[in-house]
Image 1 (cartoon, rainbow, N blue to C red):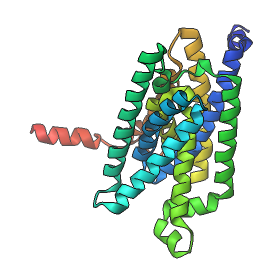
Image 2: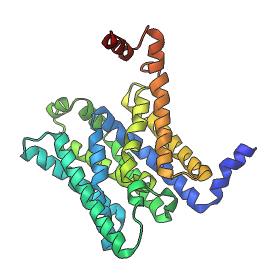
Image 3: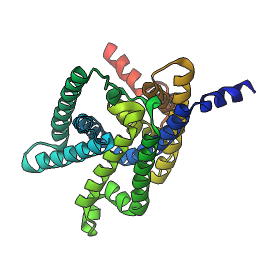
Image 4: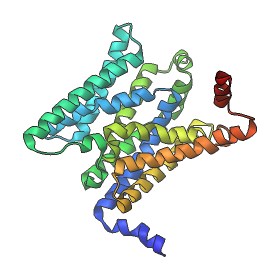
Length: 296
């Protein structure tokens, strides 16, 4: 009975109700989009887009327009710029991403610092998130973003699946691979925008990657990774919110730490890939064997 009362207590407050709804929505959308990033080994791209939204946030604040719009435009612009540098120069995609996201992030920090000095306000929640400040309008905006992302994934699931695992084969089959790639970047930008209030642009990569990575250690197929990753992300988001409420912790980092704990458990005890399980089947882990050989 006491446990049930503890679970119900935060729901008496409107800000916690809104925060939990947004946490649930963000957990769902990040796990779905992050699964594609994980399979394509493009985690750095998620980091690039999440950092590149900073100038858009600042400019939207200056122009007094919806920050979601500014962040989305900046995210898409950074994606196009990465593609342009990759096509027009001999640089690889990872170098282009590093250049763009660091430059955009530096510009965003500069603009936000100037705004804070001139207006005497704190905009650090853009960096680290502040889900407890979610407004009813934020809930609606997040729900719209999630509906768009999930709708697109359901509509183009087979095409995105083909492109994700075999881009050359998809191109040979006549699929518009460049359009699919750009569409995937748009979905990542939308997921990043939706996650800003929850964990901020610095920690958003954790929500994009860790739930899917955890699921990847436990199941085989992409749709299973998406489904289980969504469950893990939603559970972690809600658990993090309760930890934040009862123990006075920052909400964004608390959510990320819960996802990290889930990943650690999967890494240790996964039936197929678990470090602990494998160590029981071998005389000595490979790393320890190498260390022992070096010490001889």
